[in-house]
Length: 309
Image 1 (cartoon, rainbow, N blue to C red):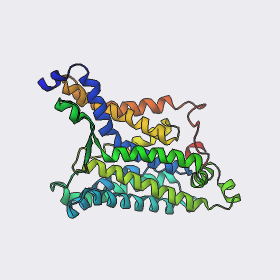
Image 2: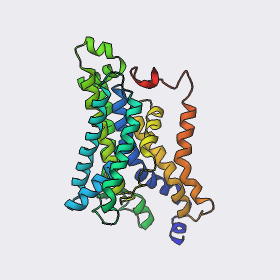
Image 3: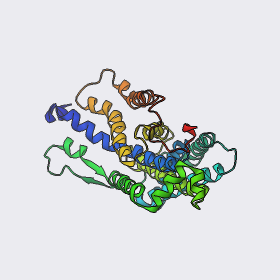
C-alpha cells in the first residue's frame, strides 16, 4: 500500500501497462496461431486445449530437463502435433472443422490434466525477462517494466507474419487457399497440404503461449491455468480483422483488461476487486456483439472460413 502511494497516481496506468504486457503474451501467441490458421481457410477452436497441453508439456519438460527453453521447444512441438492432427482430420470430406476443434480442445485438456498431475507441486525453472526499468529508483516501476523475452518474440513474429502475407510467395499461397479452394487448385496448389501446415504452425504458436503461462506468468502448472484464453483468442482474431499486427494490439487490449484488477488493488482499491477479473470476458462479449453486424462482421475474412458460409 505504501509502495503504491510512493509511485503516485500515475502508478495505475503504469501497473496496467506492465500487467498488459505480462497478461497479453499468451493472447498474442494464440491469436497469431489462429490468425495463420484462419487465413488458410480453417477455424481451430481446439487451441484452448492446445494452450493447456502446451502449458503442461512445457512445465514438465522444463522441470525434467532443468531448462525453460527446452520446455518452450517441447510445448511448440506438442502444439504442432495437435495442429497437425486437427488439420489431417479436417481434410476428409464432410468433416466440420468447428466440431473437430471442440473435440481437440477436450482432448488436449483431458490429456493435460491426466499427465500433468505429478507436476502440480514441483517447481520448474522460469523463463528469463529483460529489465526496461533499470533507470528507475522505485522498485514498483522496475517490476512493471520487466519484459519477458517471449513478448518481444511475439512482436517479432507479428511483424514477420505481416510481411509474409504481403510480400512473399508463402503468404500469397496461404491467402489464395484461404480465399478460394477452387482458385488454389486451378493454380496447381494443394489446399489440404497448405491448411495442414498452417494449422500445425498455428498449433505450435499456441503451445508456446501455453509454455509462457506455466513458465513465467503466473509461472506454475495447474489445471485452471488457461481461463479460456484460447477461446477468447478466436474473438480477438475476428476483432483484429485477420491482420497479425492488429492481433498484437488487440492482445495488449485484452491484456490490459486482465491487468485492471491487480492494478487497482496495487493502489488500495479493494472493493469489488474480484469483479475486475471478469473484464476480459466482458470485453470478449462486447467485441462479439460489436462485430456481429451482418454488413461488417466478416469484413476481411478469408472466403473459405466456415463462418462465411
